[in-house]
Amino acid sequence: MPGKISIIGTGNVGASCAQRIAERGYTDIVLVDIIPGLAQGKALDISQSAPIVNFDTSVTGTNSYEETANSEVVIIASGFSRKPGMTRDELVQANMKIVAEVTTSLVKHSPDCIIIMVTNPVDAMTYLAIKTSKFPRNRVVGLSGVLDGARFSSLIAAEVKVSPASVSACVLGEHGKNMVVIPRLTTVKGKPLTKLLPKETIDKLVKRTVMGGDEIVGLLKTGSAFYAPSAAVARMAEAIILDKKEVLPCAACLDGEYGIKETVIGVPVRLGKKGIEKIIELELTKEEKQALNNSAKAVQELIKTMGLR
Image 1 (cartoon, helix red, strand yellow):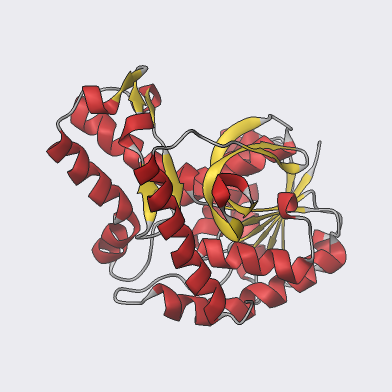
Image 2 (cartoon, helix red, strand yellow):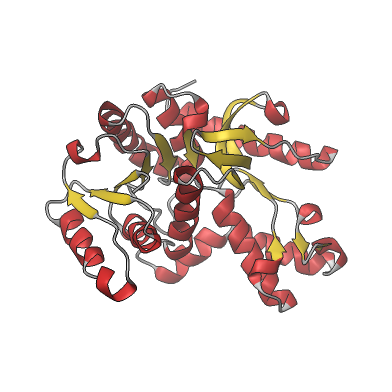
């Protein structure tokens, strides 16, 4: 096996992500959870699907961090999920202690790992992990645009009646209500979306994308999305472990790119063995730049609530 991935938190996202990665068969997996038996049980269940799906991946469950030692990638999916009516500020307060403790523990055993942050609000938690781990910014990346872009692409595909694979979406900024969806740079079979759909229709699709997580939380009542998020995280992990140099929209800490500093927001990045190997700067209009700056300010306010500024 070319690497080892540890997944911290075996709720719906963490466990689904483990299943997706295991079926790809390119790395061993360690599942960690504080609840006795939970990670062990899910690891055993996934392992017993191997003869059916045909993979050789080793999947281990544990309640300690010792078995995560020397992980190449660590996915942090622990913490509270959003409940109906819960604000992102409330979510920050609930999850910051968990993320800080998890980060400290995993860094002790895997000082050279790449961290993929899933815990929400992901932009703020990614920033917290960078400060807690003291890793360089390229080694901590958060889930954002891979998921948001997929949501936008799926809605467009249904509207235009094409395969989702033929849609290339452009979504930047905060993973939340301040995300910046850019229809001008979104294409369907290479054609700009703005040439295919009227503005009113595009606006409706954009609004539904921005509220995508809330829509699912409202429908499920007792949980949040996990099928699409787990698929997005698995794709990011694969790009890193297999050194694919794939350009994906992720939550990254900017240091002057797009005129923004010391803030984590979603931008296109090239992912490889070293984590974020390059931040791609798109040519944005004045209005798009302003929207991205406003999105960054929203994240900065969340960061302030954690006392990191």
